[in-house]
Length: 250
Image (cartoon, rainbow, N blue to C red):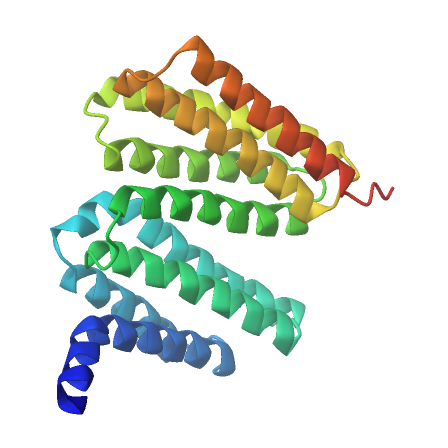
């Protein structure tokens, strides 16, 4: 009986996925503690390229999320070494990266039962993580920062619509472009509000997630007046909650 239980547990544990996460942690740690040596940098890109190529055909649908996350991790390590981040902050960012990386690989390996729900939650979480970093380092927005935000949002939105089965490239392009530009305007507004970088990121993520879902509902034929009012109600109520818990410090 005990042998059957152990065998069952082994079958349920995605061991290859666990080894990839451990390898990612080791590569990131090596790059950090080697003070960004060329050998560690080469190992970093080689490791993530090999992991990507080893995945199933599903990797193509998640290409933008995968490489944006890897590129973000690379530059955050570079910034962290220059800014002398504390070990606690570095460890927290490492955990965030590994959590998002685990979800991406899990979707590529079909670990999760509900792929679409998992991806939609991941997409919003990725937006929140990146926007938090964005507002932390860019309390006053520069043109380069806004352009980077637009490109990042556009690529993730394009992937979101494609993953959820929107088959019309021109419609995906139009919706992604419009929402990315709108997100830059909301980001500009949020940057002037003294609500703290986490609440600003939450506000921008809330807007983009609800607008993204409304656009998807339109493409899938589920959009209605009732749906619109429900989304607007969610936006108003959650926005008020974000503003109420904000410190409003000048």
